[in-house]
Image (cartoon, rainbow, N blue to C red; front, side, top):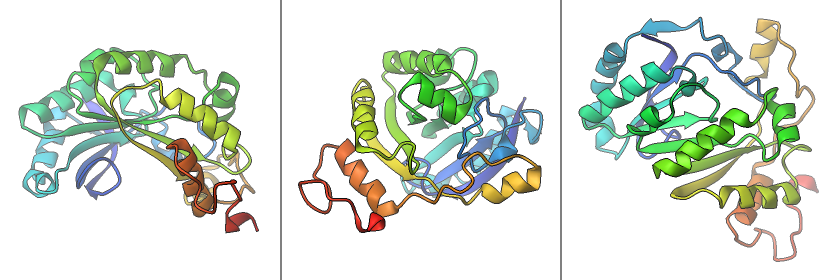
Length: 249
């Protein structure tokens, strides 16, 4: 038995193709920029069995498989419900469904039993050093490092993501250091930088939770793309000398 926050049947940014996305309830991190604080409490959400969740996914199987899609377990943090997650992924594989988990790598339990049934891991790397990680998430990096070790041993295909926040993770020095960290992983099929946004800020006020990044402007999408080009070893979009984009002019 597990707890699900919500379900999206036409996910387009949660892995290859069209995805059936199950957002798991519960998260152990308290990221400053989290846009879904309503997923934090693991005791909330809809209680459901792995079999029941599979039945919901199978209804859309013919549709999402035509696009090369499948099922993505997101959150919250799906790794916080390891037994339920592993069982659901196993059932998906038995039914010929492509599986992905969208995770920050901060969970509990045996990761091997989860990765055994996972075709793709979409890993959100919050920060590259202990001080920065704790500042952004309120937690230590130990659990992420444990997951990363299991991930490297598993050989599971991997997409890497990182949120770029003005004044925090948007320097070229930070991005070049991030590149070194990402190069330590094998089987990386995609790397993406995501611009920080404030779309979930109103939830904090409604829930009576202080928003840690109040006053920080959304990250410029053009500058984010320039930094992504640096991360991927390409030239910056303006010129070879690294002139800043028009966002900062």
